[in-house]
Length: 526
Ligand SMILES: [Zn+2]
View 1 (cartoon, helix red, strand yellow):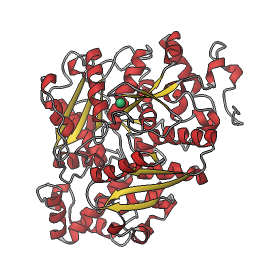
View 2 (view 1 turned 90 degrees about the vertical axis):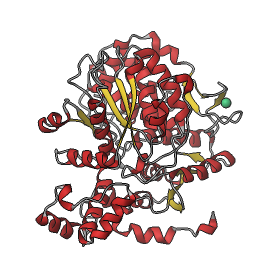
View 3 (view 1 turned 180 degrees about the horizontal axis):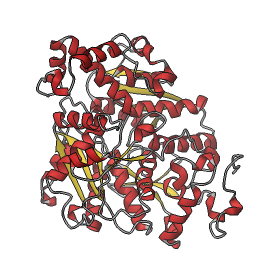
C-alpha cells in the first residue's frame, strides 16, 4: 500500500515488532451467521436474512481466534501507532481493520473522511445543570453529517470489493430512510460511480427538505410512499428478498461492523479505560446500540479494554418498543411487541418495530451476563424533554440535533433515576454521553424554520406542536423574545437555508423541493 507523500512518520520509525502489522492484509474468514438457526452463508452472496428461517445475520470472522494470539496491549499499541500513518484506507473506520472487515483488500476500501469524530466536553455550566461531567461525541462531523457514514463506509467498501472481484457490473442499492441513512447511502454510492445505482425510499411528508437534498444531490433516485418508516422498510425488505439488490439499511450486517468503530474510537479516546463510564445512545432501528454493544464486547474479548462501560439506550415515549420490552424485569416473561408510533421530533428514532431487535435481545443478554444486570438500561423521555435538552445543548456550544437532544434527555433521566449511582459506576462523576448527533445542522435548520413559521403564524406553530404531541408553548417559552423573533424571521424566512451546511453547499439544497417534486412517482406506481 502506497503511503502519501508528506506523512510525518515513516514505517521504519515505528517500533520494530509493530511494523509487519501496521499495514494489514486480508486474513479473516468472514461468513454470515443466522442469529436464529445458526446456519452460515457465504459472504459472496447478497444476503440480508437467513434463506432457511428469515432470521437476522451477524457477521462472524471464523478466523478471529488469530487475534487472540496477541495480548490486548499489542492491539492498543498497534491502533495508536496506526493513527500516525498517512494511508487513506486506514484513516477512517478501517483504522481498526482487523475488527471491521479483514477480508477487503486496502485498495477496495472507500474512505470519504468518516470516523474519528471529536468528543467535546460539556462546559462547566452544562455539566453543572446535568449533574455530571460528560462529553458529546459529535458524529454530525461525518461526511454526510450523520453517524451512518461509519456503517456505510464498511458496507460500500464490501460492495466495491464484491463488484470488482466478481465482475458483477452495476448493482442497485436500496434503503428505506427518514433521512440520514439515505443521505449516507447515496453519498457513498455516488463515490463508486458506475458500479452502483442508488435508490432511497422515504415516508411522504416525514423528512425535511434539507434532509431530502442530500440523496437527491448525490444523484440517488428518491421515491416516497405514504406511511411511516416501518412501511418503507417493508417495501425494501420485499425487494431484497426477491431481487439481487444491495440493501443498505441496518439489516445489512456490514453496516453494523462499520458502526462498531464508534465504540472503538471511544475506547481509544479514553486510553482504553472505560471503567465506570456510561455511553448514552438513542434507539430507533437499534442498529447503533447493537453495534456499540457488539464493539465493546469484542474489545473486551481481546483484552483491549478490561472493563465494560454501562450502555443506556434512549427512546421517545412516542416510539418506545425497546423500552417497553425491558420494562418487564423477569426475562422469561418478556415479549417483544411492536408499537404504532406517533410523530416525534426525533424523526430518525421514530420506529415502532426495530429491525435489529433480535440482535439487541441477544447482545443485552451477553452484555449483562458479563458486566452485570445494571450494565444495560433503556430509558424513555418525552417530546418536551427532547426539545428542551436539544436547546440546552445548543445554548452551551454543542451542535445537537433532536437525536442529540434525545440522548441528553435520556442521560438526564438516567441520572435522575439513580441509574448511574450503583456499584458499576465507580467513577460516578464522569460519564460519557456518546451522542449520535445525526445530521446535526440539517435537523436544527428545519426546527428553526418551524419555529420561525410559527412565530409568524401562531396557529401554524400550535398545529405543529400538537402534531408532535407537545403542549403549545409561547415563543418566550423557547427563550425567544420579540427582538429574537424578528431576527429569526428575517434570517429564516427569506433565506430558509441560510444556516448552510456542507451538504447544502455541495448540493444546492435550495432546489431540493423542485427536484423532489419532479422525481416523485405517483402512488399508483407502487
Ligand atoms: Zn436461520
